[in-house]
Image (cartoon, rainbow, N blue to C red; front, side):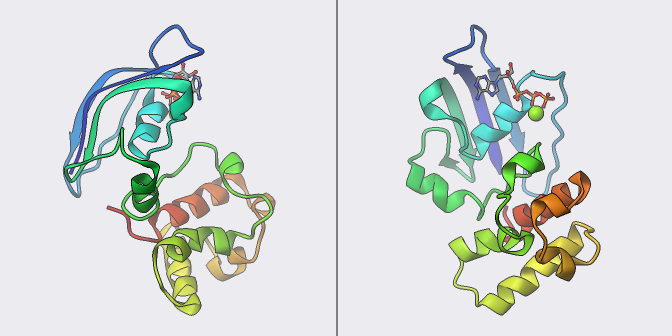
Length: 169
Ligand SMILES: Nc1ncnc2c1ncn2[C@@H]1O[C@H](COP(=O)(O)OP(=O)(O)OP(=O)(O)O)[C@@H](O)[C@H]1O
Ligand SMILES: [Mg+2]
């Protein structure tokens, strides 16, 4: 279960809060869509959950609990354990989030390399399965391509595969 309790985020270089008192609860297996106009704080809310706020450049208050564990104020070492293992992120701009110098396959497998002892071949098979689940055509061929060789939509799907490959909560 994920709980956000009265989340406020204010960037130092802005006059107004980016997130102003968001509270919500998501049960296991539940899907929640957050709807709002551009700039209303949806991505900043999501980044707060994923531990990706630029902490030095903003003030933030509230609590974010993943199965009872507080994330908003947690140490970086705690966040690193959770990122890519219990929480996966599909970023809004695939072009700016993939490493342009790394082939797609190793990027999709990255969380498995970091968080598991899985042998290379098993990682590769898991990556192929995640790419198929994200409905990428020809996963094997795409593993060997660089980000600039894919369309925007294919890159977004590759990023979905990278986010789910380690089966986050
Ligand atoms: N790193 C940052 N530094 C300063 N201001 C930021 C930063 N990131 C976001 N903001 C500001 O916070 C506000 C909320 O942005 P956010 O990206 O959460 O909007 P959004 O709801 O996801 O919009 P969209 O629908 O366009 O994706 C905006 O005013 C934005 O300019
Ligand atoms: Mg956004």
